[in-house]
Image (cartoon, rainbow, N blue to C red; front, side):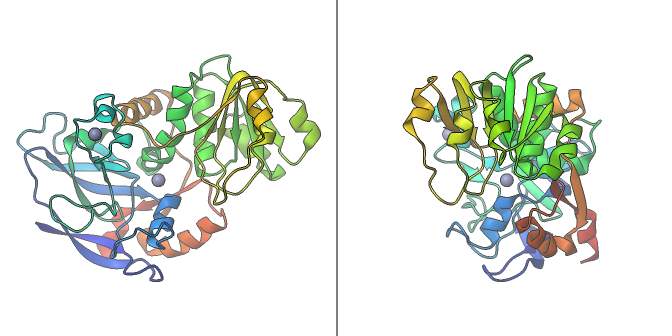
Length: 349
Ligand SMILES: [Zn+2]
Ligand SMILES: [Zn+2]
């Protein structure tokens, strides 16, 4: 074992603070990464504050990790010291179940999340990316294109794959009409991907002042969702709608905008159960789905796609010392569009 610097929370009501954690020595399959940037995902905040009632303390969150390989185990073939590397929400799975065999590790019943998941090497739970170092099985380490800004790459590992995967799964290509509901951390990535895939992109927002930004990010049209007339103009016209909103909202208003056989996929998680009018689905054979990150192969495909199309997240880079303030701002949606922690700031702790 070796010691790493980190920021951890000691309880649901404690702020994140400087800490020292233990990481495992490399097995032959492991890659050790010096973490350069880690994005802040809303899940980090939910976990730190035990809002899903499963947090083990101390917790070191962070699953949008980008860094440089410092050491590799003897059986590692895909990475060498000095390479750029990324780690997302998953660090291990059984590798033998149907989901794993289909490159859908995110559905493996025996997967290990990057943080707050039982650690089969050291006991206790896994520690995430708010740290200067992490050790991960090579199967869960991603290659990072060298032409991209690393601070903006970090959020691709969760926000990026969360939005890329459903667009890809539902066949979004050139000529399709795609709606993106909500323009936050997830929504802004959805817009960039749908645009780069060649779709006609319509952003739905409750804030008219987001219009200019939506167009800059790649939207072709912006609809203020409170304006019923504007909404109605789009009835029956969408091939696919990506709903990224995590506040309660009327989903029927969007289902009615789908063309026959159109799909709406949820990636946001409103706290209350949604009310679905049966006719919103029956008429036009609409379908409603959810989606959760993506498998490792698809995450690599997404990163390669980002390299080709020069796509990164729009980030505000902060030192780790500002992380608690960033959490408060996250709750007010006061960030364009994702925080990325510069881990060099951890050196002064
Ligand atoms: Zn996340
Ligand atoms: Zn599995």
